[in-house]
Amino acid sequence: MRTLYDAVVVGAGPAGSATARDIARKGFKVLVLEEHAAVGRPTHCSGLVTPRTLEATGVGHDIVLNRIVGARVSVPSGKELVIGGDRVHALVVDRARFDDLLCHQAQEAQALLELNARFSYLQREGRLLRIYVERHGRRLSFRTKLLIGADGASSTVAAQVGRGRADGTISCLTAEVIGGTPSQQMVEVFLDKSSAPGWFGWALPMGDGRWQVGTGVAGEFKPLESLRLLAQAFPARLGNMRPMRFEAGMLPLWMPMKPYASNVLLVGDAARHMKPTSGGGIYPGLVGARLAAHAAIEGLKEDNLSEAFLSRYHRMFMDELGDEFKRATDVRRVFLSLSSERLERLLAILSTRRRQDILREYGDIDFPSRLFYELAKTSPSLLTLVRVPPRYPWAWLPWRYRGGA
Image 1 (spheres, one colour):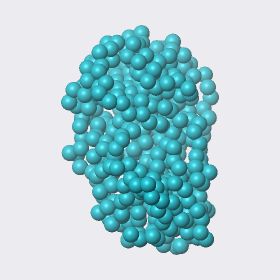
Image 2 (tube, helix red, strand yellow):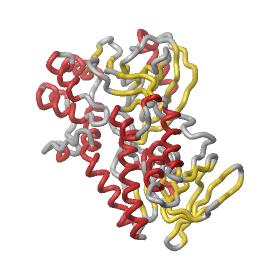
Image 3 (cartoon, helix red, strand yellow):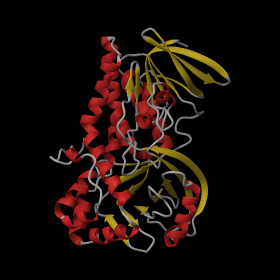
Image 4 (cartoon, one colour):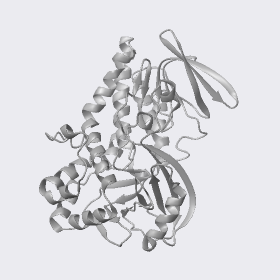
């Protein structure tokens, strides 16, 4: 095995594999390190993506498990808001196969994959990095010009270069269940500040009588207790569900940070490229992967992998998705400020026919802030529910939406 690589990617999730693929396609020597025995296992994500996300990967539709036409938002009092229902808005994909196919694309581009390889730490050797890896009880080392951290929410690479942080992270628990009565083609969203403080619960139909039921919590509240309380708060939907298996994970919601250092780039969850409104990270992770690969290729060609040069990756990402993430951060602050009574008022306001039309026209889980902007513009009464000023008012005015980016 080689001991010197142009780039080493830690983590074979979607962002890591896509970055490795794009760099390897330009003829550079790339090594992908995956700490688990198989790519895509264990899963830490629901696998809910938009059609544009799937098309951007080049992965075929044979991995689609179900097509989602809308969402039903519920509160414990029984009030509901149905969104969409008119067309396919999202796809449920086999997440393990999705990850595996993206990694296969990287391997077809001649990137090398090492499984059961856990990144430990790095040392700088002049203009190169020496990285140390634990594999089957042995310590191995490689040298690389560029290290790309795609190792998730608790990124060891990020911690090594002083970019790791735990604040703003949501603890999640998902269960594959049978039973219950969620919709067969709608995502169920459960809003209850007592059961899921700081986040929400959900049920995602897998298309064959199974559902993925999950919850997220902020702070010290336990996700398992949250899931139990959600089943009690929404008995009509979740009361008789029977969990088959559980998986835990973390959602490192976006907040300003530098996902780069000299000879190092962070992508995906490691870069906190995760939507503050929903915790979705696949689409922004793939955007970040494309831009990180671009910066890496240029840096390798010019033999310049300094922090100043690699900062262009972050600038490109913020140009493409920065305003969206800032607006989504403002929307999340509004959500956190709403009492249970105000949440019920919000659902009632959004249930009118005029607002339902807006929800159907502008609903987009990749770019949700456009929907909130249109609602606020055409429904000033919504502003009476808002008690916190936006943190990023300049991101809203003037409107700079990049639909379909």
